Amino acid sequence: MTDSGSDKRLRDEIALLRAQNRRYRELIQNLSSTTDILRARLNDAQLKSPELRASETFGRGPGPTADLTTGSPGKKGSLHPTGQNPQHETRVELKPLVPTPGWKCLAVDRPQIRIGFTLFGMTPGDVEEAIEAIEQRQVRSRDFTPVFVTDSSDLAPFRDRGYVVEYVPASITSRAKANRAERLYLDERLELIKEKWGVRELVDLGRDNRQGIT
Amino acid sequence: MMARSVSRVRSTARLLFVSSNGVGMGHLSRLLAVARRLPNSVEAVFLTMSQALPVIQQFGFHAEYVPSQQHTRSDMATWNGWLKSTLDQVLEAYSIRAVVFDGNVVYQGICDSVLPRPDCPLIWIRRGLWRRDQDNSQSLLSGEDVDLIIEPGEVASVFDSGASVDHREGVVFVDPIRLLDPDEVLPRNESCRTLGLDPDERYVLIQLGAGNNFNIIDLIGSAIETLEKTRIARPVIAEWLTSDIGLDLWPDVPRLRCFPISRYYRAFDFTISAAGYNSFNEIISFGVPSLLTPNLNRAMDDQSARAAFADLHGAAVHLDHDMLPILDQVLDLMMDQDRRQAMKDKCQLIAKPNGAERAAQIVTDTITQVETL
Image 1 (cartoon, one colour):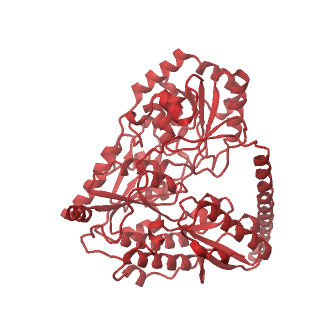
Image 2: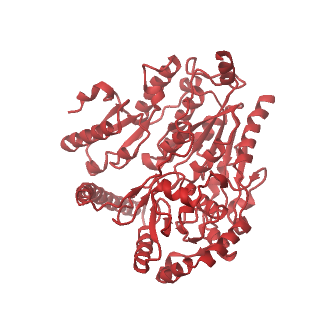
Image 3: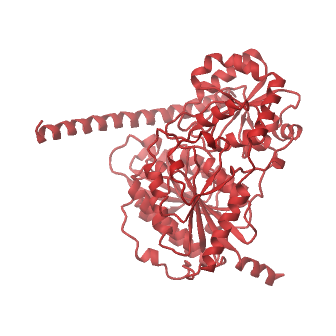
């Protein structure tokens, strides 16, 4: 077989795989909507199996958070965020990761704007509500992909919808309580998350900023 | 009072425990087992790729999270680059003195971040019993540069024929690492009361793993159908906190969602269980009669070896998925109290002590050695 022959065969195979990929994406997108409907109906009919939870919580429970101003430095001296950070200065340029657009927009194949949303200091119910509102907005407009940053340790609401989520501990996101080192760390962390996902800006939906979801 | 407090905090050395995502809770459970046994002078901080963040906080530890390569659906090289950047930030922010990783492969991003820091050793907790038909060359290669490999023991270690067996130079062995010690497992009545179960009823715990890489629905369905038909015991399904699939498909069967489930093992007359590292070692150590149905996914550890070993010693029954047609007969046998007692007795004969305390000591010694160099 000539090179051009084998190239053509390869191109055909790639085209076939792309078509298959698209069909699977559409299938997942449709199944995601169907699953929501079925789940709601099972709940309405009270056909969900009961959940057993232990009446105790084994373990020490939430302990004191690691204070960034303490902790003994290593022998070479601390590479503390309050000081210079050689790793960042020499960081190799990396290409941003591509966030998944969520199950309900999985088959959308035109370019998407990436928008970061921070959901800090919110109750689980408020987090759920915010993700749902953003999902509905995305399904309507189909022109953006959300990247979430949360301080809630329950990542299931994001995962269940097929979204990307990053986490920052609540002790660090609370600017009122955070010390200088923690505030600097939070800024660095959010900056890295933006670079990692190719997000230009982060929209703050936490605490008193929830009116931003429309 | 204040001075004492400050002095204590300043003498605290911080370790970073890093767990890969995995399909269940195994990597994280082993790290928690070690972390909770560290001396007061050493503080544990976690960086996990697992969805089970709340469990880490339940045990009183500070946790950070980084999405796994599977969850980001990115190429490995780019993801490793970002993992390195994240780890650099965490190591610096928390003034970390050593990194303890539990996962199947030490990611390049971890090596790139930790190895250039001579005062921050990298320790790999490397579970054994790899499948013989796996290509583990990448795992073996990734371990060449780490400062220390700790291999947690296996009850079924004599059945280990995986690739790690021939690469044990410099590896430190400890007994099987378990989260709980026997005195932390609640007695039957207390277990039942805590879970809201009737201690006069008979219960079977179905714990087949997270189901993230193996079809467990058919087996659960068959077991429930058989148990309901024979009415010999009431099934309870263990639902993993990291599971991608909901197991709320059987309206009359309760799902148990908590961690660690082994704390309540005595509420159950027997268990139908996968043979992952943690479940298996807990079942044998705490003497729970069991039907072991290995997860046969090729990416997993050699669960069939564990099940076969226990079966050979009369400590459990090994039931592969293709033996489902005889499930009713096997369940009937499991309801025989003498048989269950015999299994418990055999479990005690092959059980090994908990190696978590020793692992915690080794990790602590590693920091001390770096300090004295």
